[in-house]
Amino acid sequence: MARSGSLVLSLLAFAALVVVPFNCFVGAPRAPMEIDGRAAAAVAMGLAPLALEQPASAYDSVVAMLQSWLVGGTVLTVIFAAAIIAAAANPLTKRRQEVQNMMKK
Figure 1: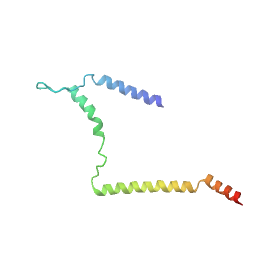
Figure 2: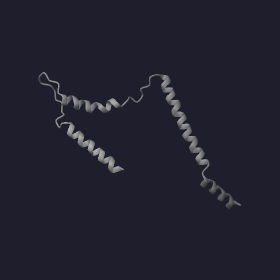
Figure 3: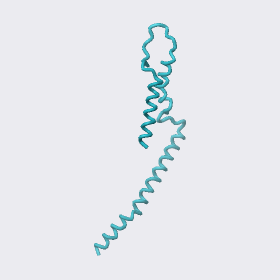
Figure 4: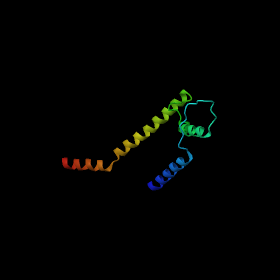
């Protein structure tokens, strides 16, 4: 499985090397500059990851923020409740307690 992922990754890297020219440096203009398609493509490819990301705390309203906190709190409560139930229902712990009680008698 790891090999197929690395194969896909290496193919994508090779495709990026073929598509993107090696002289992607955009220098300061010295004369009226024509719009270069390669430079625009390089800038667009460089800024593409930023277009996918959203700001970390971009809530539309206070209500949306409170709803997210309520959902997060509910999920954490369910996770902690499941962990407490699993700890209480642990058969090894119950067996240790039985053996300990038998040793005391």
